[in-house]
Length: 156
Image 1 (tube, rainbow, N blue to C red):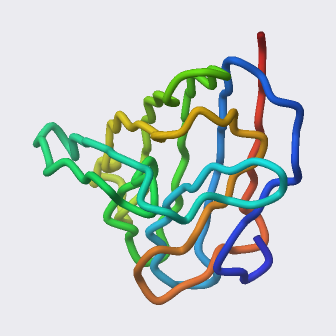
Image 2: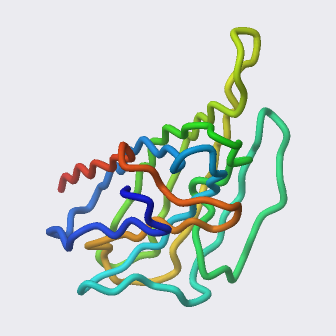
């Protein structure tokens, strides 16, 4: 957080299964649309090694292949809206990485506006285990606020 356009994790011990959970809020009334890149050895992979497919509020979106980002956190990125997400990753040491993510986006104000929900599946096409990640402000006008938080759990 802290009015930054990116959040980079410290390097962690490689595990076969990862759970990345986060709460992201914009800085002030900014708009945020975050994405995720995985990496190892302290460097995130910005190459075209990702593929994703998503469903936004029950409507299937287009898949993205050969992308430099995982649209794990694909959402409308509402003005001033907060985002809560859960990403589960099969982080095998010899196969491509597979993921599933659910994002809830508080995209509006008022008691009668339901949150947006995005379900995403993705693939990181590399045989390297992820030992860090990078959350990037992909589009919109804003930065991540100081209350943004990310947690990572891992298990073999």
